Image (cartoon, rainbow, N blue to C red; front, side, top):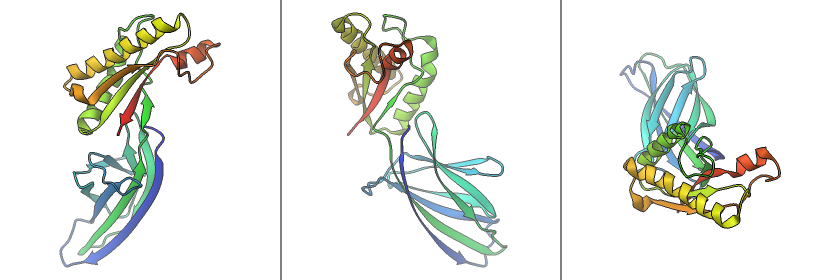
Length: 225
């Protein structure tokens, strides 16, 4: 997903014991939104800035997980979105000496976007048939909905203003229903999915240019509360 709003709250607690920890630190991660509601099913990535190696954790029903991070390493924290990862912050892990035990907590707060466009979902001209290249992004949407098992969405179909208004409205509805039916065929519950066509009524670009019309022919996903 795109357009995250970011804020970071981090606190570190260090303790020492006689037990060697293989020079790793335990990070206890808590993820919430800005109203302090817990965020289950969020994937948080820790990317080593030197090697690009990634470690990931998924928040449980309490919005938490634990992860082991190497000492003397700086990690870039990212929040995995629907189609791209969002940079959040960086955190340096100091060198951990033999016999030291290090534990720290990271509180992550963010607000995910409530809507996004399926950039690579396309239909045959004047039809509600999906083009072959659409299925990769729809597969990612299925995986997203499987992870966010309580999320309900609206699939919104939009057209440009070429042709008559009523046929465009009907076409946009059929296209939204095509996407909904595909998701249902992959095991997503129908009760979680709403399809609505908006026709040409909500342009986001100038219909007087081909580039603008192309942008207006789109399928969006709206996260429903």
